Figure 1: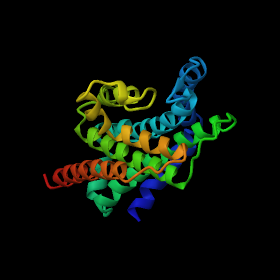
Figure 2 (figure 1 turned 90 degrees about the vertical axis):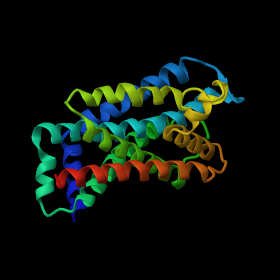
Figure 3 (figure 1 turned 60 degrees about the vertical axis):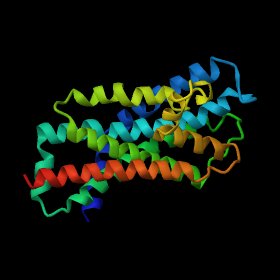
Length: 243
């Protein structure tokens, strides 16, 4: 019941700010598609660059949509509205509250990713997006929702959320196999970047879109991130409750 309550809150927020959320989810990825995909006429791995770019932008949109849906809202609710304190004294199980936040953030990210797919649908690319693609988008969203949840618990002020975006989300947006392949990166740095969650999501979605198997390694990496940051968020909130 607690999960449904949190998801209902997210749905009410989505309906209230529908146009703002949609515009925020679209403007940056669409600009990237126009500038990099249409403005720069080139190829990647022997195919039109747009074939490489679209899966990366879809994965990036799920990341930014999920992260932004949680990080700033939770920071404000925890620091100023004291909503987290109210949840702790309510009969709602805390794990349900956390799970509801993660699922709600992931669904917001999937919405952003699906909007990119709708916009790029008229472009004849022959890229394949199937159930497995959407599963990866959802899993990618849960990972970044969980990361955002942990960072919102660590935030000391309202201004910390934009800083996290600048320090974490922005570098991953450009480095993690989204716009350019990581194959040309220096050895060592390339391996570190390849283990980041967005790199794995981009790689799996791109393989599926070109008709190949995504493999299982990427799923393992994403589940590891989800387990680690999920455990940290649970430990944080239960520790705060017991203070």
